[in-house]
Every structure is written in structure tokens, then in C-alpha cells.
Image (tube, rainbow, N blue to C red; front, side, top):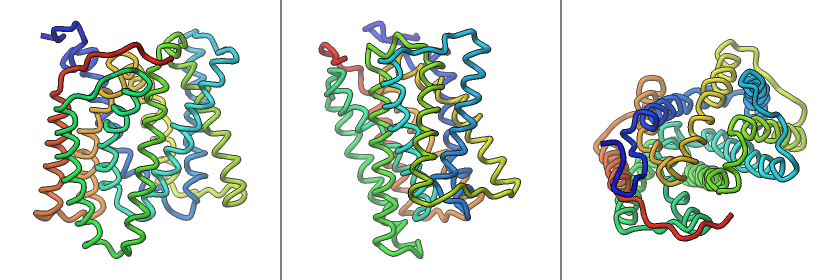
Length: 312
């Protein structure tokens, strides 16, 4: 069975499941690569380089697919807004968060993306929030609290630094959620995904360059092979491949369900953090991770709520 009673595509439908899993696995790996980017190069410049390359590659893809390059005035406004929220604010918050807390914990916190997605979806898309979603979110919140406590107890960082890392991550989550819901608005579905993304990445990169120059000065780059390779990996694999797939999911199954990919992302990220960052699993973080995943899975099992007339 590949659809529910309402005719909504099931996550088990191959055309939904395959990109869903691919996005989850790739984004699970990007957290560790981002951690390696936090070196002598200011985070804002690393974000700038990533989306300069991603934008150029996306425009090449638009040309290869023979899609229109023009969006029109209204389309460019939306591209700028998405660029600011998704490709500037979101990633600058995330990169800076990893200065203070582990990539695995940032990924786990990001698993709660479905919460603001659901709330903003209710406000702007008319999607109702049901009891199963609320219950699952509450369970996940307990798990996140346990992981947070473990991070504070085991980290050399001060309580202030840990709170700063978590706060930056939450700001990144909110920025990403705003972009997610914007992409799901009916009026944006008339624009080709690749063209919209190419321009959004372009504007995001341009804004990042200006902000970087103002806040930390002229460009700084590290010629280390791992750093340069990481930028290319994050730009091509972590952006050009994943964002078209993810934005297509947003349009087809909605912002809330698309964010369910965040259930798998932290599992991959924390496994890699264990292998490469010596992340220590004890009863507290293990229990917290299990609760977080269980809570999100409870929300995942909730049926699609009835929707009112969407805004936009």
C-alpha cells in the first residue's frame, strides 16, 4: 500500500521513500564535515564558499535541464527571502553552534525541526496539529533535555557556552523552518525548483559574503585538502543533490512530513561523531537519543491533519 485513505502519498512510496532516505543519509554525514570546517576560517566565510560553489553548480544544472533562468520580480523576491532564511541565517547559526557543542548534539537538536514546521504550517498553510504530534514532541523534548544535560556534564565548555550553542542551533532551526514553509506555499509551486534554488543559493551566498566582510574582514581560506574537499562535498553532495530532492518533498508531502527526515539524520550524525569525534555513549545520552527518536516516531505515525484554506 503506497497511499493512505485520503489519497496522500505514503512515505513508503518509492518516489517518496528513496529521496527521503537519500537526503537523510547525506545530511547525517554533513554534520561531521561541517565540524571540520570550523578551523582558522571564520564560519561565515566557510558558508560563503559553500554556496558560491553550490549556486554555480545549480545554475549549470538549470542550463543542462533546459529550464528557464528567469523568475520574474516576484520570484526573485521569494528567492531572496529563501536565500536569507535557508542559505544565510540557517547555516551561519549552525556553523557557529558547532564552535560550542558537538556535531552530533546539533544534529539531534535539529531533529526537532518538525515542531516549528508544524506550527508555521498551521499558521500559514492551515494545517491542524493533532494530539499524536503533541505527544511525540513532548517525548522528544525529554530526550533532548537528557542529551543537553549530558553535553553540559561531559563537555569542557561552560554552561554559558553550551547554552550559546543550543541557542544558535534553535535559531538555525527556526530559520530553516521559515524557508521550508515558504517553499510549501501554493504560489511558489509555479516556479521550477532548480531555478528557484539556484537563485536562492546565489542570493544567500551574496548576503553571506557581505556579512562576512563586515563582521570578520576580508576572505580567509585554508588550503588544507580536507578543508577544500569538505567545501566541495558540502556544496555538491550536501546542497546541489539534496536540496532539490528535499524541496520536492516539501511540495509533495508538506513541510511537516518532509521534516520527518530529521528522525534519521541525528542517528547517522551521532554514529559518525562516535567514530571520528570520540563521542562517549553512556546511559544518559543513549536514553536521551532513544526518547528523542521515539517521540519523533510517535509524531511520524500521526495521520495527516485536515487542512483549512492555505495562506498564499
